[in-house]
Length: 287
Image (cartoon, rainbow, N blue to C red; front, top):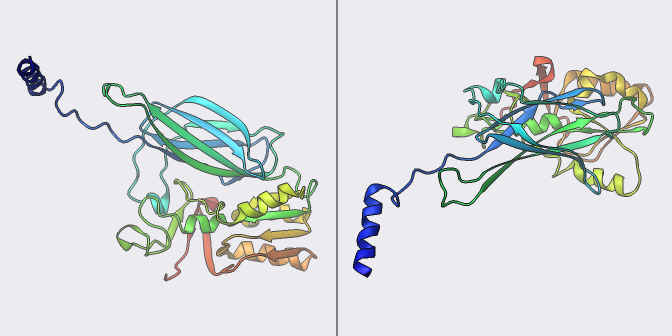
């Protein structure tokens, strides 16, 4: 009997039924938003790429207790190519999904969790796989200074400077083939340093009932009018990369009686030039 079973298995292997099946393709999801910051009423356009047929998206505001504010399953997924110059000029992926920010969403840092799965398909011997990705955006106050006189501006230029997705960052030591770039795009999946730096103040402020409004680096350049509503601007992260207009607008804020507090080092170390209406940075830092 044992001989017959062994012979039968050999026949199945030879026919490919139990032979080596091709490996399933990798499962992934990643993406970016069309802006870094928004006010309620504006729309976030998500540009996503995935090897799965559908995507689950969960959005939560990060604070002392993270609050899930929105969730959607079965967002149609599609895979898009990565251009050779994605690091410097972005991915140019088509829009996957658009979401209007509700009026009741509070100012803050919003984490967007992406999840995809497959159930094996033809690979019936394999369990369900899952893969995750993430991105972020910031919600600013629609009426700056009405709920808080404190503005926390996040070091998003530095996030981008250190992101090597697509091949290079502004640093040679962790670029592909030690390649150092002089231009980096926000239109690609970004690494966030928020959880290393600013999150600690964000959670502390929430825990102690201290209202804080949020903005990103580029808001100081492209929305300087918002500064007029505040008495204090905070920088508590790795705030290394500044454009000249950012610094000029903040110095004007100080000259007009405003206050600025930097709870960090390596601040305003490298000058950048904003391009593509703030969707890319150019800098030659020689590091």
